[in-house]
Amino acid sequence: PRVVLALGVRRDARGRPAWYRISLPGRPNGRTGWVPAASLELRPVRKEIVIDRSERTLELRNVGRVELRTRVAVGAYGMETPLGRFYVMAKFRPTAPILGAFAFETSAYSKLSEWPGGGIVGIHGTDAPYLLGQAVSHGCVRVANEAILRLGKLVPVGTPIRIVA
Image (cartoon, rainbow, N blue to C red; front, side, top):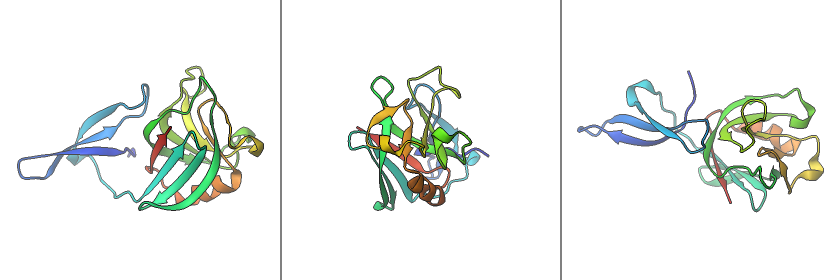
């Protein structure tokens, strides 16, 4: 099974869900598609990650209440972290020191097309915490290792991500 983010619903004449509009990962960001309701198993979402590029912060919200707030580094000029609605596609412990202690693969893509893996935007730890609060990445969101380890325990795959200016 693959985790997707449902964005909307079309109901049949009896008011039952017939189709769901879902977020499609890939280029360009913001693509959506419709799938039959019968092909999905829905689960309620209570958490959301909100990344503010200008404030250089990440908030984990649980039913709207801030559960964790931390400073981040975002994409540099020309490689900005993309704006929009995305979601967590996978969680993993990276082996590359630059990715820090933990990482999330998101459904967002950076402008950097030659990046390994096709420019997928990650939210990950860092081996350079002195860069937090700056615009220095290739589009990824860098988080202090202590914060990313906590997020790793609190954030399930499928969690929506909203990146704002």
